[in-house]
Length: 158
Length: 158
DNA sequence: CTTCTTTTTGCAAATGATTTGCAACTGCAT
DNA sequence: ATGCAGTTGCAAATCATTTGCAAAAAGAAG
Image (tube, rainbow over all chains, first blue to last red; front, side):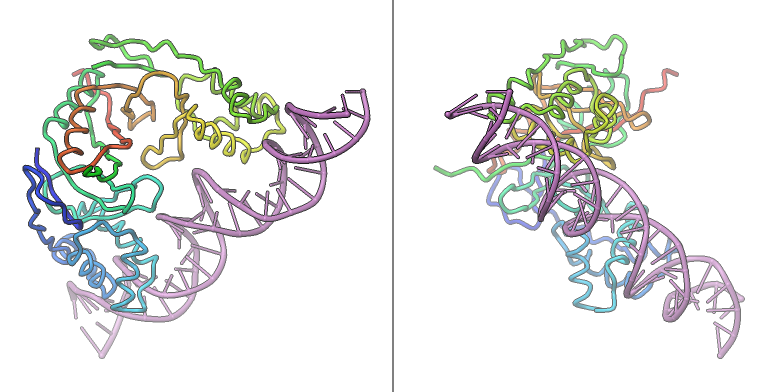
């Protein structure tokens, strides 16, 4: 099992590996896809690159507006949709909240959401992935994608 | 691994077990909780008892309206919230759609959603549950609840 | 069965997240 | 510089769900 930690600092946890954020080249991807590199889009992808957490559209909008107040929330939503279409970012709809985004940088992983703080911790388990595929296969299906989210609280270190 | 099939008929799949829908006594639960047994609520829980799939609020409303046209959609939503609060039903927010409900009858299980038909197949894997708990523990967390959904397509039987 | 109090209901309007129509604007290939 | 398809901001629209409110009904008490 590989464990990533983003945004939150978690102590020493076994196989923990602080992910070296793979800094996506969003501008290049947009360009390559023949999509115009506009001012708003530059600002937004700049924010995504500088981010290590999982902000929602409104949060991205706030950060963008701080740089260029003329940017609109609709444009943030539109840009996220474009990037998602390119596979450059992933959208996560965690329980009871707006969608949150993250760069589609590193390897695949799932999420543990801290119910008290909203912090998101990433982890990955090949064993679980294998079991998922096996289950689907037994049911006559191929897994196109999945969603695995653990909602929990920090253990009281009694 | 235990595999349930509800709503959809799936062939012979290893350890498959057709779940004997545990017919909840919703009326008794409401009564016991000191919640009034009104006409709309009787109709709605009647629908839930007769159901083996995962209908959304609008679908429940349609079925209810067919029995008593005076029932409103708001009441369906309100009733689902009450039942959820009692732990009598579970709410599932699958990707890109409204919440779908199911009686909290049998044992815990996760879901495989057929991307082409929207059908939901239930399955359960102790092995996956164990792995989830182990991962959370390593990260210093206790799992309060989780969400595991496989989105897939029927395998072409080439 | 009538009365009384409290919970529920239906309806319409409000919410929250996200999308869309449209006219004005702007990358960027020529 | 020029031209136009791709983009933007804004306001209004959508979707699922919730809520305010006055009228209606449940169930305890007499």
